[in-house]
Image 1 (cartoon, rainbow, N blue to C red):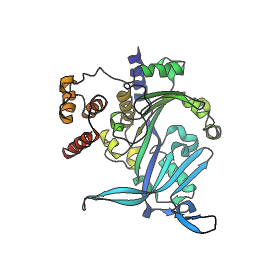
Image 2: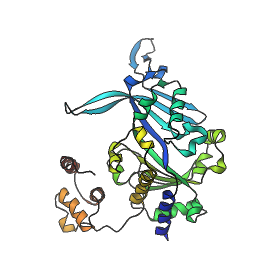
Image 3: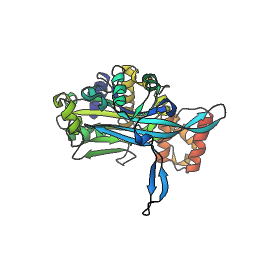
Image 4: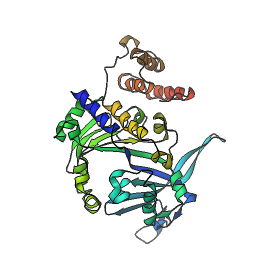
Length: 348
């Protein structure tokens, strides 16, 4: 019965719209004109005698109106120079953009059709200005893809029962940062897997969250936005959401270009597969054949590929995750292992 429920959840995503709920973009600083003092003026640290003892460089502005919050930051981003084969740091304007900037069209998510409206909203804040072409070409990270649905489509009328049944098919133990976390607070309830923190585990077990969108929309954190822009009757009662952390994570999903314009133009199937991949990696597990105890002293490289062979050629990243949980290898061994994989140009 539980497996049928998970299959239905996958089918719902395949038959519904998946879109971007939020993301962070970055634009080279020299392509931007800063218009707010938070991004232009130094702040001086003064002691009790009125003497200047230090300065704070301008680097952040938070804009928040009617429940719509946009964060602007100036960051030094590491950039690889292939000609010198060295990493150098380059200043970028980084902007955290939620789909709420679309106001009454929020539930549509950020798409190719409404991207110009996103740009117009950012410009209306008069924090920083940049050309629309540079906005479209900006590079993206921390991309949240979402799909809204009603749990009644899965045969449920109780959200707690829904998340309990999801818990029964979780792959990992109920440990924060390592597995699932069922939660119920004054502002929301649901179940989440892993964290949004950027680690090598994001590819193996991407962050996944299923929660009550209607409760969240009516919570004290969102009620101002909901009352201003939404018809609560049109808000579906549940949302599935996953985070794609960076370019490497996108590449593992078959997406080589992390520009904003490319992401909003991904096919419907591509976007659905991103969310289905997160569900499959976190929810649908099979019994793992572990490496025999007598072989556990073998080198890590052999251990991982032995796992792959004994489990009908499971993927490399799945084998690495099992080795992390059940193997007994030092940090230095793992470092050397990943270095060897990089030299072999193996994706993991």
